[in-house]
Amino acid sequence: MPNTSMEVLFETMRSYAAEHHVPIMEEQGIDELLALLRQQKPLRLLELGTAIGYSALRMADALPDVSIDTIERDEERFGKALGFIRESGMESRVRAICADALELDIAELSPYYDAMFIDAAKGQYERFFDKYESLLSPGGIIYCDNMSMHGMAEQPIKEVPRRKRTMIRNIRSFRERMDKHPGFDCELLPVGDGLLVCRKK
Image (tube, rainbow, N blue to C red; front, side, top):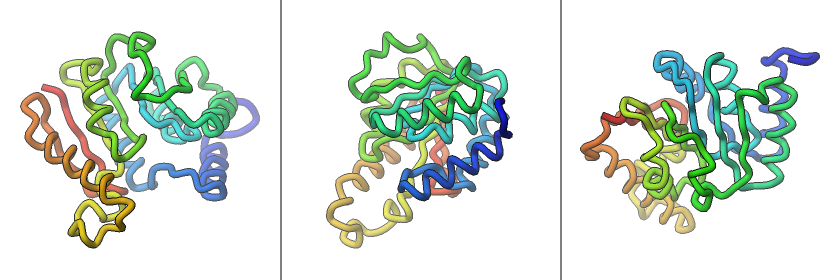
């Protein structure tokens, strides 16, 4: 990559995220995600929620054979992501799409993916799942971040701030649905902010 190492770029991205209050994966969570992806070795991956491209580039760096489509609706963050992707030299393997993932025509995407990473609007995971699950290959895996939401998903709902209660109810509903889903084997890992790993049967 031009002029700098990936580690320097990742540190720049972490600093930008901290300064501009952009949520990116906690280090423990992304380390576990990358370990799981190295085991799985997906060739095509769909990410919902690019933000500034940190997780997409970490995944691309860890998996030299993967091609990633990543979707972001915030135009400012999308613009930053494009800049970081260019700086990484990975434009040929990381395609960023500026769109609302719930409104995007899935015909614009690959007909299948080996893996999906959902890290977008926390209260909408069920809707993301319903829209994109058909693109996941048999044996493919969906990884979902923020399933704990800083511990709030485990708290009595009356202890959750009122403005966050709908989101927390939605996260709980999604977790319960996936735990009982006949088409998936799921495990909630207590790493980072809670990583749900669901393998399609």
